[in-house]
Image 1 (cartoon, rainbow, N blue to C red):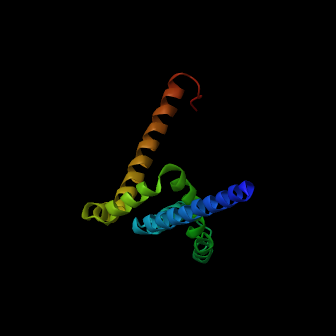
Image 2 (image 1 turned 180 degrees about the vertical axis):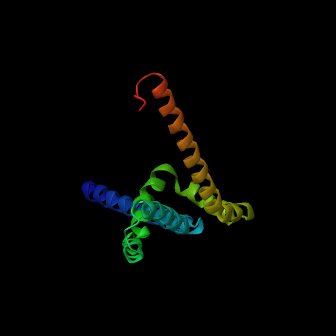
Image 3 (image 1 turned 45 degrees about the vertical axis):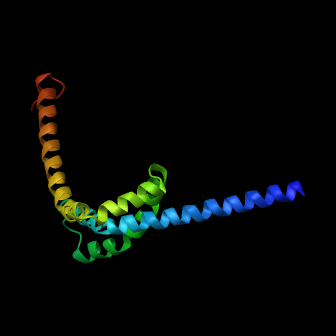
Length: 147
């Protein structure tokens, strides 16, 4: 009898944990949708493709269009959900949802693509300057032979 009670308790507790997990995942998906993660993901893919287009100018527009269709962002989001699960409690996720539904949260969502684009350009420029500086110092120290 005790054994049956223990098994039943374990079964019911695993069901409760599973239900809590599915609720948390539902909240994570809601947060990802609310924050416009798909839009940001598509912007990121557009930037990546733009870079590839510059490096591979022979590739056709049809090639890049087909590639974009193949790069299913929903697959990426499914891989990201466990990151949210590990780093935030369900209460945290719910509080983030409330924040992103607030006026300042909505403003953050609206401004994020511009902020990311500008930040990426700044980072790219900074990286280029840093690279040039390193190359110059390597030349000065004789690690790179000047031709």
